[in-house]
Amino acid sequence: MLNETTTDSGMRIWHARPDDTDTPRPVVLLLHERYGPVEHTFNVLERFAKSGFIAAMPDLFYRYKGDRGEVERAEARVEVTDTETITDIDATLAYLRSLPYVDGTQVGVSGFCLSGRTPIVYAAARPDDVSAISVTHGGIYPRDYNGDTPGQAPVGGLIPQIACPVLGMFGENDRLVPMENIRRFRSELERTGANYWVRVFADTPHGWMNTTNSAIFREAQSETAWETLAEFYSGVFAGAWDKGNRTWRFEPDAALNHDFSC
Image (cartoon, helix red, strand yellow):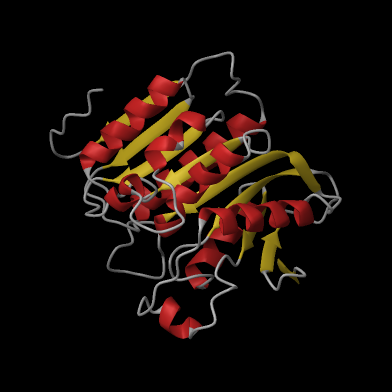
């Protein structure tokens, strides 16, 4: 069951929980894709809840005054500055921490596509508030490294500031995420000493977890990705990814012979 609230700023927040008990549960904060909150993102939200987490999603496009239908159809694009994003996630977590069934000390931040870089941004800005982040088919586009968007810092300068474990999942056939960027991402995480788990899914296009788009959805890879997300966040919240133990997991399940060496 989805719950909805609206903050004083006008931002809507949806959240779902795995059961009706008031036993505090860890949070996984979902950041929506370029389409805003749509059927697919609500499906993702509910899937996170079924995995045992309090799953929450803010509408990061609430400041946009144009036609949201155009945004949902990818006919218009909304860009949010890093300052706005940090402010909005701060407000979302403040609300969630007011709920009796939320363990506000255990917080994961998950981004997909356009929002893939956002967990990196927030983890760099609020290292004490984030337990783990996941980046799925996004976050390390050329534009993310180049800093092409006003108000958005290049991710290359943010990655060294990450202190929490990182999960990165990418499709081999994703035209938006070059293989060399995956290699660079892994190398930067190792240089900074962050614990990470990076997976490449063979023969997989951009957005392969989107059940509402039959052209790109890949059921087998999607289920594996969901198992990976659940294992990663559950492990972090249970203490399995302790900072004192270096954990570097790299699984380049690629059909072609790419050079992933650091």
